[in-house]
Length: 475
Image (cartoon, rainbow, N blue to C red; front, side, top):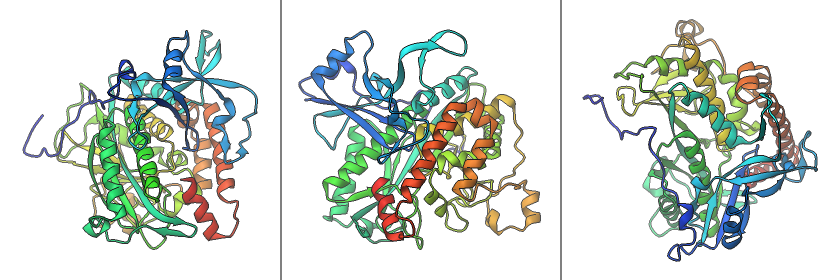
């Protein structure tokens, strides 16, 4: 559908990113020597095995390609092990050959994502043999997407990657000082300008669409905006983008951090997540949400206080999500082009490019788990035809600035989780997320690792400077 209201580039669920076919791995012109077989653990650490190409090709010829990885790998934090992760046992980590991308920061290497599987099949809930691993973040997202696709619902997801470039972590010192979106954030010939340009080039060389980059508001803060993709591909592309950002910065002697907020007198860093809902039966019109968009939004809002345990996963995340700093605020609401709402409706008058900007996600969240939870909650709302009772809060006053009576009139009756502890309690008691979307085992193990992470980040006690250094060196 086109109209005078339409603006922006139109995408569809058939959009795909360019990757390298497995048959091209031996192409002499590509000069590929090593494979980085990568995964993302429950605390959003990117881990890998580096495999020489000849051996990787031999693995692919085996009856069941994959490498053994200790099961404890999903429960490690620094040198601490979360409860419920014994030292015994090993998974088979199986490469997903549709995810091969060049590593521009390390010529001759490509990265590949994969799936955790049990080495030995076991009887599943239906008494059929399976090798599925309930704790595998990518497999969890894939399962959620299969459920939604079975009734004709598809999603597109695009990410904004905000990060801060540091020239020192001890003490924490930004690589630059500038104002929001100003050109003085990357003066010509500077180390920062060279770093950003190489990051931008690397993202595009990896087959990922880069829409733009610019200086953000905090010292040393920048943002890379990549185009929308189907959710699993989008999460893969985000991980690859983060690796490019981190490793390119390191090449220039800088530290890139995705920590949520390191300057309390300036803006925090997020991972704003743009989601559009698609269905062949979904007729979108200007300035009015379709029924499936309304039900999707209604269920996301209803479950938002629990969702933040996955999307804002560390205590420091809650230093960013406060009222009055353009982070999304603390009231459960949505608003057309309202950046002080946790869900911003973007491009409301353009049916072809309209999307929900999910503002309650930061760079410490595992994107597979965050998307599984958000999309799973939204899909449940579509399936159950949940009614949207929270009205649009477009401004000029934010939800925090309204009176209690005004909020009630808009259906704004919930607060977001205001602390890390509250978010964890809300996840534990949310039956939809705990039992249906994530599953009881993943929820329990996630909360255990999440607690261990918080303990590890607090090893410095009351020493704020040391704690900040630990945070930016970890994320």
